[in-house]
Length: 139
Image: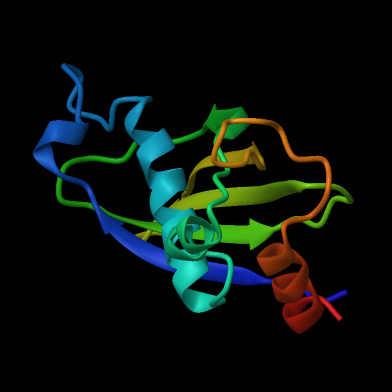
């Protein structure tokens, strides 16, 4: 199976820092979202626009983050987003967030998203668009 990874750059903004002048822990969740959006653009067919066209949504079910080193205002983070295949109607990603200037690992984490339909019902079968995406990129 192919390993699919995307790397995006995020510059730390003032509104993301806390009173200790470091990126607030909750802002790292936004960086994971930035990574997923970039991943969807890099590997077409799995992005949020694709989901919306299909009438499918994929809310976060589970998120884990370990904080290892600080990021400061105006520093650039490199968000490495890797698709993690797991069977079933779900999307799983692993992340590593590095400080660009010295390549220090600042955070790592995982997310799991589950598919729901327009009525908000949990889907147990793979959405068609997701199955087609898997056939294109994973085989």
